[in-house]
Image (tube, rainbow, N blue to C red; front, side, top):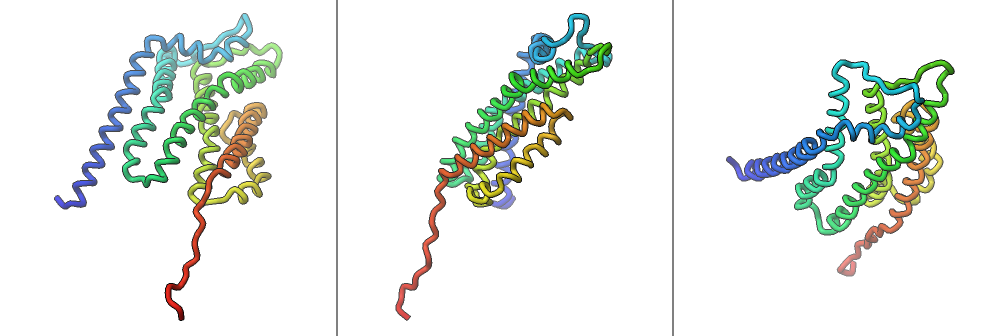
Length: 249
C-alpha cells in the first residue's frame, strides 16, 4: 500500500465514523419521539386544524396512512433536530484542511446558518402556514366539504418548511460569494431589480401555486439578500501591492 493510499483510507474511515455518529443520533431522536408521533402530528397541523369547520375534518385515504404519515413526520423531525450535530461533524471533518483565516469565518457562518435555517422553519410555521391555510379554507366553493388528506397535508407543510429554511440561508450565500471573490458588494447592489424579480420567480417555483405563499416567501428572500449585502460590506479584501524592481535598470 502506497503512502498516498494510506491517508485516503484514513480519511474515508473518519468520514464513515462521523456519518455513523450522525445516523445514530437521528435514530436516538426517532426512537425517543415516535411514541409521541400522533401528538406531534396534531401540533404540526394545528395552523390548519384551528381553521377547519366543525362538521369537517382530516381524512386518511391510504390504508397505511395513519401509521406511515406520523412515521415519516417523526423521521424528518429527527433529522431536523440533528442538523446542528450533523453540521458539526462535517465541520470537524473539513476543518483540518482549512487555513486559519478561513476558520475565523467558518465558525460564525456555521452557527449563523443553523440559526437562520431554524428561523426559516419557525417563520413558516407561525406566519406562513396560518396565512396559506386561511386562504385555502376561505376560497373553496360553497357547498364543498373541505376534508384534506393527512398525507398531503404533511407533504405540503414539509415543502414549505424546507423552502423557507433554505431561503433563509440567503445572507450566508451572499456573504460567501463576496468573501470568495465571485462577486462584489457593488455588483450585487447594481443587480437589485433582477434579484427582486428573481425572488418572486423562485417563490413561484418552490412554493404551492398560490400568490400568498409565493409573496410571503419572495419578500423575506429579498430582505435577507439585503442583509447579506450589508454584512458583506464588513469584508476587507487585502489590497494587492504592485511589483517593484529591486535593482536599477
